[in-house]
Amino acid sequence: MNASATMQIVRSIAELQNILNPRKRGGRTIGFVPTMGFLHEGHLELVKQARRDHDLVVMSIFVNPAQFGPGEDYEAYPRDEQRDAELASAAGVDYLFVPAVNEMYPRTSSIRILPGEQAARLCGASRPGHFDGVLKVLLKLFNIVDPDESYFGMKDAQQLAIIETFVRDFNLRTSICRVPTVREEDGLAKSSRNVRLEPQERDQAPAIYRALCMGKRSYYEGVSLKEVEKIVSNVIENETSGTIDYVKALAYPSLDESFGEAEEIIIATAVKFTSTRLIDNIIMSSIKDEKNV
Amino acid sequence: MNASATMQIVRSIAELQNILNPRKRGGRTIGFVPTMGFLHEGHLELVKQARRDHDLVVMSIFVNPAQFGPGEDYEAYPRDEQRDAELASAAGVDYLFVPAVNEMYPRTSSIRILPGEQAARLCGASRPGHFDGVLKVLLKLFNIVDPDESYFGMKDAQQLAIIETFVRDFNLRTSICRVPTVREEDGLAKSSRNVRLEPQERDQAPAIYRALCMGKRSYYEGVSLKEVEKIVSNVIENETSGTIDYVKALAYPSLDESFGEAEEIIIATAVKFTSTRLIDNIIMSSIKDEKNV
Image 1: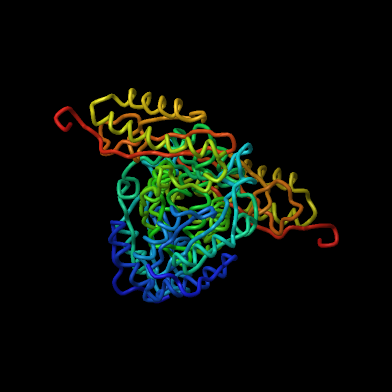
Image 2: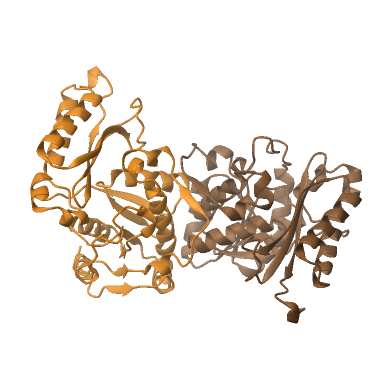
């Protein structure tokens, strides 16, 4: 939890491995926080947990072009390395890995990692190839850093579900720590994209989380999940100027529409505003049958 | 090079990692030889090199269902674990990893690794999905074993080229050692499938390597690669009862048909016999222009 005295910024893969490999061999454990930068309290919460659990904390900042589609906001994605470095250092990061694009992708690879059905739903439906790009960069980062544990926020719940599947099915050597979404006072999930909301949109945006909470209450009151989706949609439509991309209730983390075996249910939503698109979700225990209500 | 006194057979992933992880942390290096078993001198040559280079030698034997197509020889693939264990132990393997299918694949994964163009040529053309399965099992095995170096024979030249690409493009933590093809006295490349040749086919099969050598000589005498392919095909057609699947000259290891930048050229062939299909290849330095001849 104590801040690192001297955080080191590393830009090359070889240099990072030269630093980390002997420390790993010396018995130090590594907590890893992969990010796209423009850090907010959500990221710092990941660092805080990694700091508590491990000897060394590595954060990466890399706006990964492979996970942005042609019409998406890769160029416009907010960047501020100097501020990020100050925040990361204060939060206790030991090594900040900030590779250039051609360090991570010196050539186009003919090999792709394709997530299946789990990636075709929710955000995947409107962002084809997005999760391919996420898995690609994560496999590279996991191999470069060789972390004992990697930290991901629950806000990107679909991403987290796919990563957990990847780690489990391919025996990746890192374990995954789920960290709850950090929110503003008014309930809006922290996001690097929040700065791109118009002032009026920023005022409306907390309705997204209010809607999800209302959906959860309704579910526990016995409302069907189809009806829950409608309730959440109505609140967002009535209280914001955003356009709903989806409001969906699915089993978690399988993201199946069959709820038979599910321990948990996610209600997830994505809402488009003028210059950005926000996502949020709420997870709740599954009500298996009437007796459990 | 000295044989291991007591080779240990390990069937579970957890047990293997419990053995290897502390030894890795203690500074021991691991040489890894992944195989499908039914060992021959080609495999033992891989072990010999791994033994020379590393503190610990791990061999896996796993007939990987994911790399066999529906009409292929998964069921018929030869297996003899006891004989393999004796050969492996005598060659100096320390740990023989022999997982059951449901240890490696406890569930169907929705995530796939797709090699691109490089996998669509040569054997890939007639074995769709084959190299997907190879990369899948290797990513799992590399993560389970965490080898410093992994050993592959040049006989499976396309497989080796794709693996080298995978390691390079995804920063896998193992390095790859190319080991030359081991041959019978008469030139036939050693293969677990050779036992499935009819006696008469076995007599003819050395013509495959003779044809490749003739192709190489012709190339150095100035014959074009298109003509070289014809020369090799003619020898195989005239001297064996096998059916040619392909005879192809490509840049190596890119497996491109453009030879501009290539340092090396591969002539690769696959020939179908009654109950099995053999592959072989020869690699030669590229003649870049007339002046270099």
